Image (cartoon, rainbow, N blue to C red; front, side):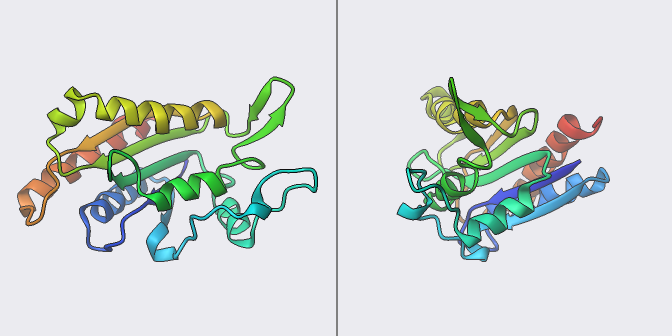
Length: 197
C-alpha cells in the first residue's frame, strides 16, 4: 500500500508537521510505502492558471502539476494534514487540490457530468485548530468542513473517506506530553484503518 501524506503549514516545526511525520512513520511501520508532499517546503504554487482550464483549445497541465501527478499516480491513500484557518484548509492545499487532483487526474468529463478516476483509493484527513475540539464539533464547523472538502472531493474523484481526525486547542507552548498523546492517536488511527491492508 502506498500513502501520499500531503501537508500544509509554513512552519517546518509546527504541530501539523509533527502529525504528518508521525503519520508517515506509522504507515512505514506497517511496511507501507510513503511519499510526503510538504506543500510549503516544495514551494508549490497554488494559483490555477488560465491555460490550465479546460477549453476548446484543449487542456495542458503545467510542468509542476505533471510532476505532482507522476508522484501520486500509484497512491492508494491520500492523507491530508492541515490546520483550519477560518474553518477551511490553507489556500495552498486548496490550490493543490484545484490544480493537481483536477480534470485529467482526479476525474474526466463524461456523459453524465464527471467520471471519477481515483475509484477505490482512500482519503483520510487530520486537521487542527486553536478552538477546542468540542466547540468545532458542536458548532457544526467540522461537519461543514467534512462535507465541503472531504466528501465533495471524494465524490468527484471516487475516493473513499475513511476518517477525519481533528485536534483542537493547538496553541503556543504545547507540552511534550500533550503532543505525544496526540501523536499516539495518529499512530492508533493509522493502525486501525490500514493495519489489515
